[in-house]
Image 1 (spheres, rainbow, N blue to C red):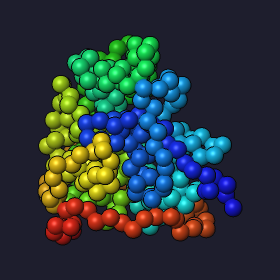
Image 2 (tube, helix red, strand yellow):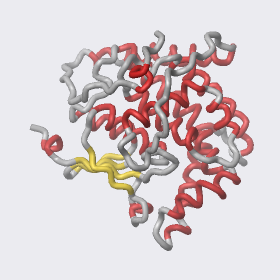
Image 3 (cartoon, rainbow, N blue to C red):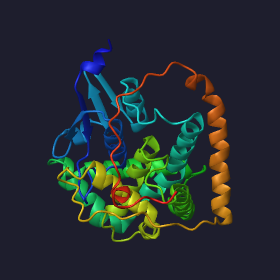
Length: 318
């Protein structure tokens, strides 16, 4: 018997605000996945502790094992038979990997820039929040350290040598991010989740990336304005918060969401090109994944799917 399965699991992450269980994208991804897969974890916010500087979050601790990074944590949970992707086909599994790669390559740099590099947002929202959640004297150090890490990550993801100024890649960052949001909106359509009636790891990643941008009170963000024009994506976030996190004190949902609105059915040239890129990557992943899929699979510990708020009120168009 796997000893880790019998051990209690603790998830260390940044705490919540803005109506979210965590303001931190990577922490949100893992929190959502634990809800979707039925994994029982004790959530331990690192706010106001020295872990704000000593621990890389999110971190899942199970017995003598400590796992960091969302992808590694989700893989660990799957090995414990907490698998939100159990019912996906090989094609859907490949699509999941392709879309997650797209989120990390096209959307994440713009989110990092929005919260950590944009001077107005950093001075008025991001820095004060993380400083207020860090004990003295770390409150003077933690925000700057996180901002430096975000800038380095942006340049490593999008820059081409030689790198001189972040301004050299700003335009492309936001153009790519808006195209990514458009593609996600088109892919989701009027559904509640990306694959059927139950959320999967792709829904967890999409929620983690989208929810902070949707909920934060940003002084300056064209990207947030663009997201708020895509009603099905904001409704997607609100629905997950209401169905899976409504009992949490930091997620106060004022009203139930109605059926998700329709989105445009046509694609412009850039969106079509991005869709073709994702499909090409998905086809490659599906071929590489054949051997893995043919290995023995065990039915996971998974909760009964919760009805979405929209489907509780009326059926969602196919």
